Amino acid sequence: MPDLMSFFRLSRSMRSIPLGVLLASAGVAAAPAAAEEGMPLAYGIEAPADALPPARSTDETARFAQDTGEIDENILLPAARPQDDDESRTYARDYFAIAAGVITVPSYNGSDERNILPAFYFRGRFKGYSFSTRGTNFQVDLIRQQRGQKTDIKFGPIINLRSDRTGRIKDAQVEALGDRKMAVELGISAGITQSGIITSKYDQIGFRLVGLKDISGRHGSWVVSPTIDYGTPLSKRAYIGLSASTNIYGKGFGRYYFDVDPLGSAASGLPVYSGASRKATVGKYTLGIAGAYALSGDLRRGFVLIGGAQYGRMTSRFADSPIVDIAGSRDQWLAGGGVAYQF
Image 1 (tube, rainbow, N blue to C red):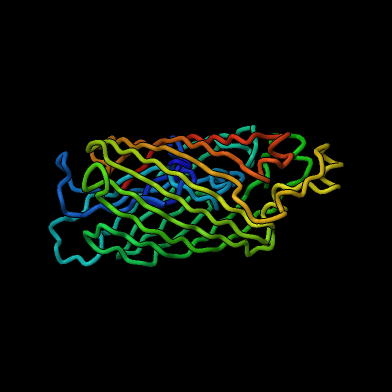
Image 2: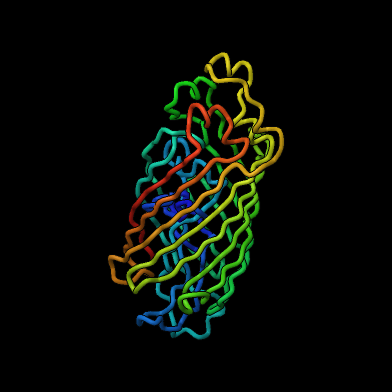
């Protein structure tokens, strides 16, 4: 959640529900996924099999997915109750989860103006294969999860539609620079999650690395995002997650979204700037927190309230860009909340 997790960026890194809808997240992205199945928790329920992630939007309906390439997951929501009596199962049981809510996000990456947008999320597992959506982001884990495993290795493809600065920009100077076209990014998400680390056998810590490359010819560059997440159940009803991530941008990404050319300078009044495209660099880091509370009395099934908040900080050449330093802000906040249902 951090990164708000993850739900609004609702993504899935620790099997959390970033709910782009999370009261927070607005993704963090990684996520602890699965604790042992079939074993009772200290407070009398079976261990959560995994947690759900958050989402981000795109320009209109998914602007929380606006920077999904940063993939941060914020909400860690345990999945539905496993069928403990089926000892013949080789893979973790099937489940599905949906979430919806609202999120408040900057009008563009680096903006000091805000938009309030709808957020949604869908995720699940079928025959051991997991998948999740986060706004305009979709990813699949091609490594099947075994029943009862404590260490979960993840690897699979991810596709993202980046809608940053495609519309709804509230700052007149940045708007005068012209809208950017939506970029289609394809890449790989890989990571590992371990259960039973600090507080009990059922808390989870995960690390994930996401790499995305533009295949649409928009910014023509790449984004790499390492994320670490931690989540733990506080009771049968409550769950909390923390996350931290860094976003490393390629030169083309900086040129397309953060540089200002002479024509743009004349139209907007902002100074000419070419620093963001000089070399690949860390452009942003995020910290997030997210939480979940089960209305049904069990986090792993039924209706769950989710929410979170995320703080991001633009850095280096990206922070020095006029659209951030003059027209926007280095400090980036996201927050959101909603309801999830698991079955």
